[in-house]
Image (cartoon, rainbow, N blue to C red; front, side):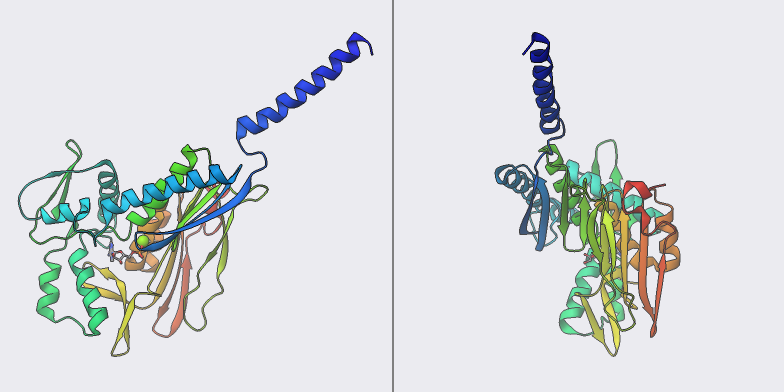
Length: 349
Ligand code: AMP
Ligand code: MG
């Protein structure tokens, strides 16, 4: 073997390893396997599917993501009297502003923007009415007019005053109660995905019941396959499959939480403007750039209905919606122009 041959072989050998080393270190994605973890958080089953180089990396990342969700539950839970949200609610009507932690600030700021856009159809101060309708579901008895009025008087996004300079909030009416149930779960999903990303896990899907967010797709695929649930009624369109990548998806519907009284079905989602649980069954699915947005929009569209709801989503960059519902006995559906191509960045225009 001549010196020249030796040089060529060495270049090939080291060059080859340099190339594979780049793939291993540079993208961190060589020979990744799929791992799935499940845990109950926020009173719901949370699921994380991810690709990692081995079980120890996968478990460490999933544990950290679940820990972040648990941390957020301590901020947003409306069942826990010691959560930051519950403590803030107890300050209502006292004429004082309460400084907020970073997570609560971000979620309330986003919630208030949507409340303004929807003129109060989406409203995180809806707590007193949500509690009222929880009692209605338990007792199967509609609320009297006086009680409904009393609870309605405690609700109103304009009485939640945020101060961006001090990052504090004041609840200006007495007996207010915040309920972040329509946005905090989505935010927790986003935060869990961000934790995975920071720990080097870039192909992941995080889901808390109907709310999911994905980073990069599984190797060789365009996206994570998500089955969008169909409405639970005769004549419903079949479930749709959406391929999700670097996007979030959320579904709102009353499948599990509703009550039927005198032949009318009332949802757990409340119209803050009337105080009533929504009637007319619907399932709303929103795809958006993050899960806090998808989650909150899905609830907002449920309240607004198909016409105003689709317009709201079409005005939100990177978002798309499908609405399926019953009007009387008729099944109707509506979707935004970009549904469902927008499920990945390729469809984002
Ligand atoms: P989701 O399942 O995401 O649609 O959220 C439903 C939850 O949001 C309910 O269980 C309530 O806690 C809360 N909620 C109900 N009605 C509203 C509303 N109009 N605006 C904001 N949150 C609501
Ligand atoms: Mg929601």
